[in-house]
Image (cartoon, rainbow, N blue to C red):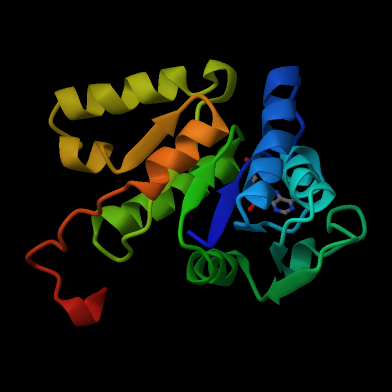
Length: 193
Ligand code: AMP
């Protein structure tokens, strides 16, 4: 993986471990020479991931829709900043630029990005690894919910397994590097992926 898109909170939250883990993920991406692709904001956990990468000489690309590109939001110091016309174009661009995806803790925006990218994976629209960084047990209840969905027969175990879960960034990146994608579903042909 040469580039990874990170989805995470635009708020800082109130958990010091999560705040630190966000910075640390950016730092580890830089150390592994993996480009960070993210939402281009200086705010919250997003700002921390970017800071961790930039402080350690990492490559960073921000992808931000025009309407969010205000002084209060946009990171002033990114080596590359791409402006998109809307949120949809932004997600597509982040997908096109990335060979893997990681969700750190976050709110609705993070959940939406995570579930869209995993839905695309379950449809065979991409074959890149998707990691969930369960920083300070933030996602325990979500993981329990996903297991309920499998138990109730509403989520295939193979699709649940598309989500690579780890407590720490190094372990997560190692697991993602060993990811074996699912075969393309029979009802989708190669041209549709
Ligand atoms: P949330 O988890 O609700 O804070 O939303 C964070 C996610 O949504 C990020 O990964 C961004 O891609 C996007 N997002 C939400 N708010 C902003 C913002 N103020 N600036 C840039 N991106 C944002």
